[in-house]
Length: 161
Image 1 (cartoon, one colour):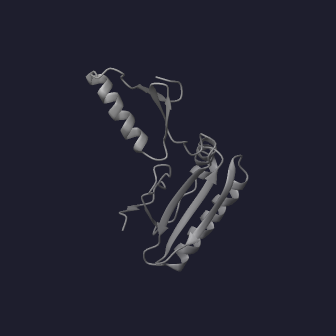
Image 2 (tube, rainbow, N blue to C red):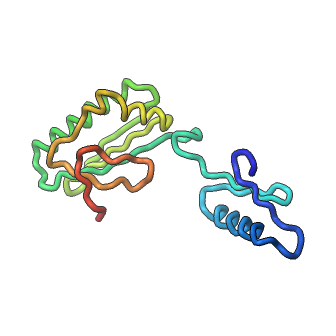
Image 3 (cartoon, rainbow, N blue to C red):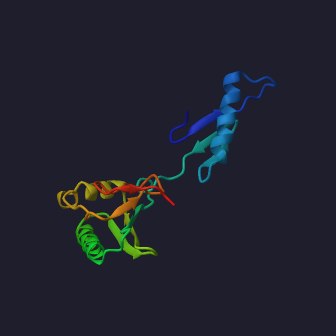
């Protein structure tokens, strides 16, 4: 194993052990997955995993989609006020880059936020003021599409369309 990657030897002899054959198959599968990077070093293939958001110099982005099914104007207003309060808190914390609340069709809202690191995002999520922040009854959410975003606590989850 190489530091920062997985070194998989290519066998020079005509016959290959079962272990070596599996290593070559694993290298082929991993190399086929974008955006991982596979490079050849001598008789070995070194496979490096794709950069992780918020860890490897890439920003950490979280996105959540909410819906107010009945379109109640008072609930929508409370939701928008809560998100504005969260944005005000975010702006005071280190590592915050940006956030925006976008109104979609059918009383749907998407809230996207970007942080310089995953740790900065986690610090925000664990901030006492954020932990006390909850959305009003009547607001639902869809499970986030990506594996980086976290669903809202105490807000019912709807199946994706």
